[in-house]
Image (cartoon, rainbow, N blue to C red; front, side):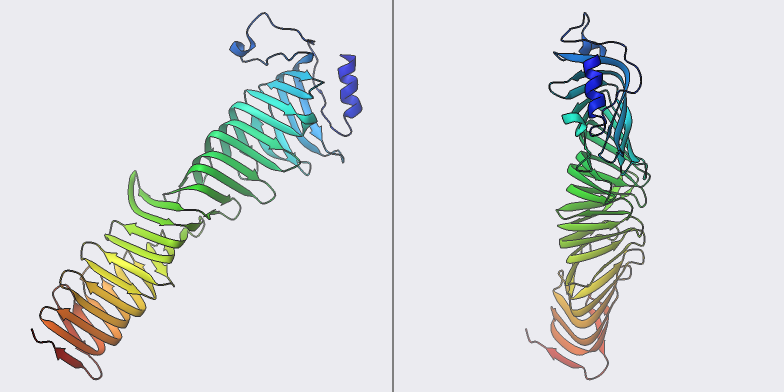
Length: 379
């Protein structure tokens, strides 16, 4: 006992691994009559010292706390500089301030306190955001400032509930990396974000991904709209999702597919917009529209396209080209303006003018404004 305490006190200014509460029993290379694993206790280590109801803590060279853990029992091996703890419960610190609260069934303190590993029903709470992470294992390296929770990870927060293989928290950046089979359920608006790697900027209220990601809009348990992209930025405060590179959104009402390399989705406002070349497919009407940029208001069921617009009605092969184009998905009326070029296959017809109105599916299109040029192609 004297040697152990002398070792601790001698190294305390540098290491700060201190027994604060009570010393009730010491075992040196001894075993137990009962099975420790069966009782959830710490397995004795050969040439070790055993303590009950003990507090361990670690400080840096300036005396600032790095971590502080209470345990029902600690088994310390001086040669290996490893302490095994039962039911550890404590706080992790940064710059002398508690940032995480942690607890578990078992704990291992390695390398004179340079690393802590907690196992079994791990619970870690971010004291600032109140986010709670649960998993099978936790790892904390004070020098690196990274808290890792892995295996069977579940997370809870007022904005987001999540599951993943692993989470890494960087307190200084207020950032959480989620890795492997990530499912993040956003509360408002209700949507599921799925991918292999998501970054949650907690204070910025943003979820980002630089890898393929899928975002599903939910109505109860029903998926109404699905968006995919190679990259994504979800603004939880503005309730918008920006998808880039091979971005696509498929909606159920109206039945529509939108493709572009940049799509901005106002989830609450039900508005899609893109300042890049965009293709819109209306599946029920079999209309395909393309343009340099466009906006779709799903609530009013209106589509607005600008720049080198082309709309094709696949059923009758009628085509409208123009500078701007408006499509009313409820009435199926169109309004095309600027360098309008209308063509149809049956009967063959080509008309050019400044403005076109009407309906493409039944070929009742009126060309007006400026000098109208018509050409009837003989059979």
